[in-house]
Image 1 (spheres, one colour):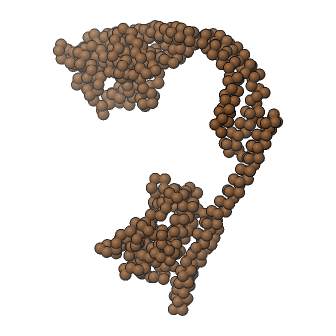
Image 2 (cartoon, rainbow, N blue to C red):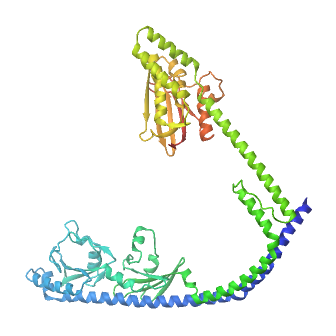
Length: 585
């Protein structure tokens, strides 16, 4: 046996080696001669080229932002230096009209200004728009930009992008420049310039590279994003950047590697903002198109030559075996109708015939097994569903006769109708799984009959969690549990009987409980070993067997019981619980 295995393994290995030697020789020769050297050289050149290009664009972008914000700062300084502005901020009101005219003229020449406002400490304002008024629900002195402007002692500060909610009825997306104004040593107010966010956005969009290998974003002095091409993803937490690392960058260009990203950062001396370029490391080694074509052409030549030689060597030997292997694979994946091609050499044709004979026999055996198993399952389900206690039928008919003799015709009609519906559900065909509401109604018919028999000695309650009425449940599983609660629980008790049916959800499971206030369930742990006719005998076993047949062995009946002694009359002593997956009909 060992000898045979060794020969077979050697034969398979030799065949595979003969086929692959020529291919591997040519392909590995190509890789060994060209790839390591050219790849490393190209990687280095491309990385340096992309990094230098990103640095140049970054420096240009930073200068563009500084130039633009410098012009914004000049306009602010011009406003702050106007005598009318200083008079207004010092508390005078006569200069307000002249000041607002100046502000309107400046704002009219700067379409990128959204607000140009002087805010006094007493809450008065002069603005480039006459319809502007403060939001009564916001205190600008509690804003972060106000605190920073006061701490800057007259120097201008720039905020990150934000929603301006200081003014009534307007909530634009802006970048704010704020500057504290003084009269001597006394703080008189704040000069506020709200810049339209779209202006900064347009500067960065103009720097976007055609090949999309890099993108740029801007970080404020507070470490928050001023601009990012995917700003909504940043705010929603879907995308993140290494803000802590780039926020410490200096005024010289710095290169920072975080994970698979290369960050190139430069801090602005004017605004203290950090302009950042981001390049994915993987894109740095992307080959130029002409190199790719050259490598591809050379590689295709060697691969084509190796493939031709391999195909010529392997065609006659491997094609029949490969066909038989594919047939086996399809059969393994479940295609029982697959047939092996026997048009090959004699030995392989014999293997194909044997395979076809085997698959035909297996298919017949599977069909026979499936049919037998289905027939067995249907027979077991029908046998379990058909069980009903004859003495219940006898006692019910006796009660009908007795009530008829004493003239209680309405009760006779009610009991007869309930019995008719009960028997109809018992013997009717149809689906094995029905709506929970239908099963509850069937059980109500049974309880109606028993209530008429026992009178005030028996009452029952039904509680169904809203929304479960259409959930699927096995037919005829509740009545045996209710019958067990009646005959082995409440009937032997001296007090009035109470049976409660409850249905509720437990995650993906449906839980149905039948409880009673009877004498309790004796030796509940061993109820499955009891003989038919004993307490908890055939009725409970019937229900559990059907549940196991339909849902699987992990779903069994659960029984909880406690001693009747010391309990109130309406306290439950026994709970029988059905738990199985919810079924959607």
